[in-house]
Image 1 (cartoon, helix red, strand yellow):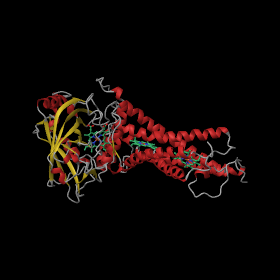
Image 2: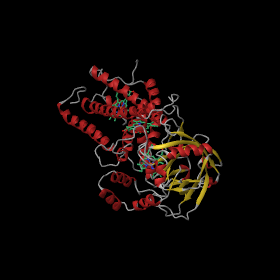
Image 3: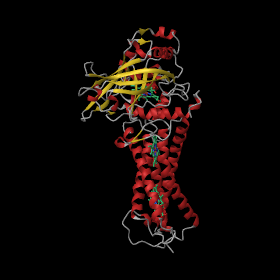
Image 4: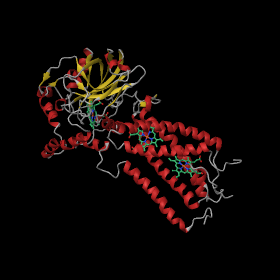
Length: 187
Length: 350
Ligand code: HEM
Ligand code: HEM
Ligand code: HEM
């Protein structure tokens, strides 16, 4: 990439943090609602479906922005294995962000549930009822959900490692705070 | 100290902090998922309590496991519009799909051994908007709360006769249900029973007025009572044979009667019937035109989740619909995953 940016564009940062909060909320709401028979189950699952579909739209916007703006380079002194790990994990995070809502929708369609979001918005079914498909999507949504959470934790640990220990300016590339004078990535 | 890219010895403190943040997040997740609080009433525990000692009815519903599908029409007479803006209350005919069933976790139960009969029903508006309900024949529910329902299942499953006594002293509302179960007449047909929502819901009309309601599907066929022993003599699957033959010779009808609560009526407790003199509005007629066995029938794939509601109907402060929705979802997940234990015979279905 010629003249790679030194940091993520403000809109990219905004989306990163907005979506991070929402996705963490989705993961907690997900496991919280399926283990509850209390009255809050109904508002929780309504939020889960609505926010999940909104996140699907947002991740598409985010990918378009990513293709347009690109991403700042990682510090040159970062060991190659770590660079690879960073790239792969980011790719996986994008993958989860796309796949999780699709599985959620697919699971509901394959069980012949109407998909009704907040405000009565109805999403038409794109798949017929199928026990087989429902079971596949349900299992995938559950287990990939757990894997997603594990990866988010790893990503969080890595971000803190950059910010607090390596102090190599990686965190500043996406920092939600107004940018202070920060270290340039080592040439 | 700010030499970029170098891990200092002083970073040990930071590492501990990072570990604490990650560990704390994982613990919060586990707590939210209920893994650290085995006492929480979850759908899984409710399903475990429903499961008979012989094991779960693989491929079948975890409760109301024995049933038969029907299709037909809901003919709205237009009177419901005053109470709710649900599209299916506008005068007209709307496709209906449902399931007659027995309140048991055993799909092979003998008809005469099951006291509670039910009806699952789905009515679709012209634009596809759905209303699903699952109703039973007792005039009120056995207990006041989902937690008490769980306790009832656990107590009833125990061999110890003291268990039920302890349960009843903690949940005195159960006595009325026990009395109903003992004394209420049995009928010899699904077509002669009333099916009651028991749970309350809130209807909202076009002006935004709200009313707490319950509803019943009241048969037009006159109920003839029959001794339990006589029903038993007719055979283990008499009800399904009877309704199949009956509908084949003529469509069967139920009037949908909405009961409107007065202020102060107990909307949150389905074990408390409302006084008889409450306002009743007949909103339409369910016409059952065709019966099909469940194995390949259209009701098999439907979860008659009572919280699938159209615009104009919403849940009230009754705690049951939410609990039922969560448990029925899990029951559906399980039975769909076990479909090979209850194979379809038609090859047509993908
Ligand atoms: C659900 C939560 C999150 C998701 C799905 C997520 C996703 C992502 C993705 C996909 C990227 C790569 C951006 C790109 O190259 O296009 C990224 C970058 C980054 N994220 Fe997150 N993130 C989450 C939460 C967090 C949290 C909680 C932190 C910090 C505490 C964080 C810190 C960072 C940092 C520092 C980068 C920049 C990495 C670089 O410059 O290459 N993220 N995030
Ligand atoms: C970023 C997107 C999403 C994430 C991270 C997510 C995460 C989760 C998690 C962690 C669970 C709990 C799994 C378990 O412990 O059993 C769950 C369950 C569920 N999710 Fe999602 N979800 C997302 C999107 C969606 C969408 C868009 C829908 C539907 C429109 C959806 C529908 C469901 C349903 C119905 C369940 C309950 C599954 C069952 O047990 O029957 N999810 N989700
Ligand atoms: C917390 C209390 C309750 C629990 C845990 C419970 C549990 C269940 C379960 C697991 C199913 C099978 C769902 C499926 O796989 O599709 C079921 C079906 C059914 N339940 Fe309940 N139930 C409860 C309360 C009620 C109440 C209050 C009523 C009636 C007013 C009711 C009426 C029915 C009917 C009619 C069906 C059969 C629906 C069909 O044909 O698919 N249940 N119940």
